[in-house]
Length: 281
Image (cartoon, rainbow, N blue to C red; front, side, top):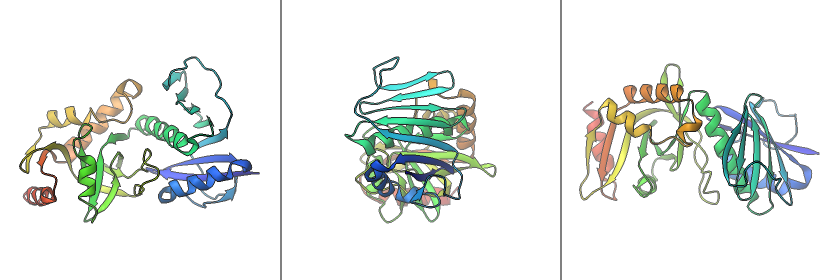
């Protein structure tokens, strides 16, 4: 018997199919992606009433097959993407949207999450979406996106904003919906034992590059500055993305959304600064 788990991220449904002996992993995945489950949760393969756009077979193996490169990373061979990690080897036919992943028993759940994260990155960007390393926070039903290099304060901002909805403090997805850019939450792919990301689609109130400082203030970006900043944020390297689609979605985002440099102290005063600025817009 096979079991199927369907997850949905940014309106894309993925079917994960596992053999009966791996039911323990299936149950772990149900917990990990509980916020992002699509349709029925536990079902025999093929019984769910919501069709999947991506289908992935999951196998736990004793060893990984040799391939063209033994170095972990992302490789493309024609229409096939190969993702190799230290504990897994995944393959995806990008045209058919079908793939499989072999996973070593150690860190099985984490390995599958890493593979899914990369596959979603690839497919979303090829559809004209934008996957950004950023923190997304929803306040009053509008999303505020905070970004910056490692240690710039994304996790700090999330910790200071627990009264609001945290979409993710790692990766968020932006897609054009009904003619305007919207943001989607994603799972906490790399923090599987902590709280989860949140599912949903929201209007974007503003983009904020984080700069730690001894006072709190905002500095508005020009269009060119905003484009330069956003183009440093995609979740996979630019050489693996369709540059025309990347530029198109980034341009729409910067034209539609106020973009700032946010100098801030590690306290909640930055929210008052943001609210005051946006009210005057």
